[in-house]
Amino acid sequence: MGAAVELLDEHGERGLTFRLLAERLSTGPGALYWHVANKDELVALAADHVLGHALAEVPPPTGDAVAGLRTLAVTVFDALDRHAWAASRVTAPATLANALRLFDRIGTLVARTGLPAERHFEVSTAISYYITGVSAQIIAPGLTVSPATSREDFLARTADRWEALDPADYPFLTRTTANLRDHDDRDQFTTGLDLLLTGLNTTTEPGRPA
Amino acid sequence: MGAAVELLDEHGERGLTFRLLAERLSTGPGALYWHVANKDELVALAADHVLGHALAEVPPPTGDAVAGLRTLAVTVFDALDRHAWAASRVTAPATLANALRLFDRIGTLVARTGLPAERHFEVSTAISYYITGVSAQIIAPGLTVSPATSREDFLARTADRWEALDPADYPFLTRTTANLRDHDDRDQFTTGLDLLLTGLNTTTEPGRPA
DNA sequence: AAGCACTATGGAACGCCGTTCCAGGGTGTG
DNA sequence: CACACCCTGGAACGGCGTTCCATAGTGCTT
Image (cartoon, rainbow over all chains, first blue to last red; front, top):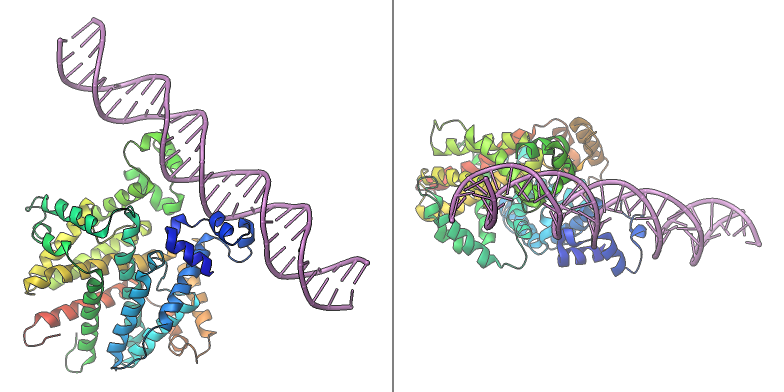
């Protein structure tokens, strides 16, 4: 399964073919079907493999539960960032081992925040969806764009297009292009995450109902 | 382009082929390539088409800016829920017309919250990522599962599997199966959304720094 | 009216992919 | 020695995205 991850890192999901993988493993395409049912399962298992490594490197919890959630989320994001193809394949409604493990760790941390028990599930789900969903959005789009164009070029061209728009139709976009040109993808992940966790803190504290 | 949306609704992204679409349009596959560059672009345009309809039906803003953001987000979610294939194709870093429009509306509303101007871009991006990313996570996974199995069956079988896990390895999962069996997907979207918007309100209010 | 450039068509053909099939090799058991 | 089982790998199938090209329509120029 490590070979599949390698090839996916090199060529992306579309570039991974059973023939290529078989060649690297010095075997035939048919042999692979003894181990996996189809390509979807192959990629899903490879993505879960990546997630497993990510979970293994999460630092031990130091601060309170919310801080632990933040660390967990950021670590997973960084790991997925190193394997862009995996980002869109790690899904929240989990069936595979490491996706289950991720959700369990989130839930365990949420349970420690002091939130009433009947809200544990929905809040854990929300955080889980945020991590996998937003990571996929931030990391994966680059795959559609031709891999030759650099991130800077792409952002610059996008910013140019925004500037060319009619300010009457797009009042916000046309005055925000500067921020687009120089932003950090990772910051965008943490900004939303911190908003979400702040919201969590607020609803946790007594005397301040949502 | 409406025909493409129809076929995507009927057969999903994998089920849409140039041959099938050509047949429905009483033409040849080659003719379609005059209008779109490739299948990716076709699906992206179809998804943007769906998003356009969603934006058109957003109710006029009534309450404050945060309430407007909530309404906008929920309306987009509901529209995507009706076209599952589109959910994973509406991406936040926008190039197409309606995706740009969505981001602009978010930004305009964020600007009205009283947040300092230098934070408008990152917060708008965060909300945008949340809407598209989490919608995709909630709506799209059902596509991978065989379409024959109902949602109830799937959840029941997943819950059974969770119950069979070792409580020592998965302490949270094994005591949360009840919530899994009867939950509303839409609630999961709004739960996270409300956390995020609560966080936004908190950071907006003076005398309460994050 | 005639010619021309340009837009648009649609069917045939190409190459590649996921997947299936199956004849056989290896290994451990009676 | 034979049988059963796990696993292999190469050939073959059907279908896909995409390309190519001869040709039909359309509107503008002369």
